[in-house]
Length: 138
Ligand code: ZN
Image (tube, rainbow, N blue to C red; front, side, top):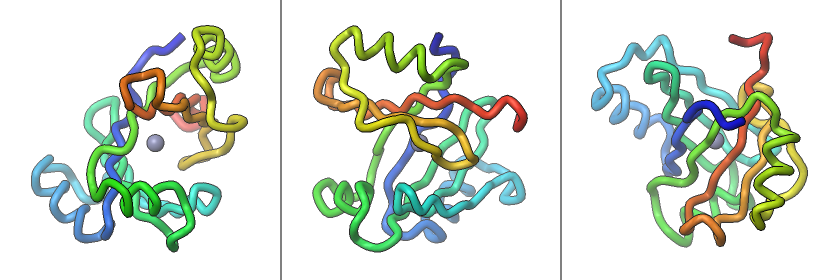
């Protein structure tokens, strides 16, 4: 079951500059922000908490990864919407049966969470990420 909006991700050229902007706009405590490198996705990410959900800022590491290519093509802006599920395998199967295409096998994303992306072709060009939060980190 999909039970929560986990985060909305925004692709940025300069994470530190964007963090300054978002911290002021959201009026949040800079100490609550987690910054992490995710080499498997070739990004550096910042998670800004808003209640139960987050805004994720994505900065490319190098010019090889999907986020770097996204920025080259579209410029900065909204990149994906992440939906939390308590059973990633089951949800991936469910949406696959509806004709959606997972982009590869589930992998480990930021925070050690299991994630999978769905091809945006069938979802009005919205890139969805399914994420299974680590039950030990809650
Ligand atoms: Zn994400």
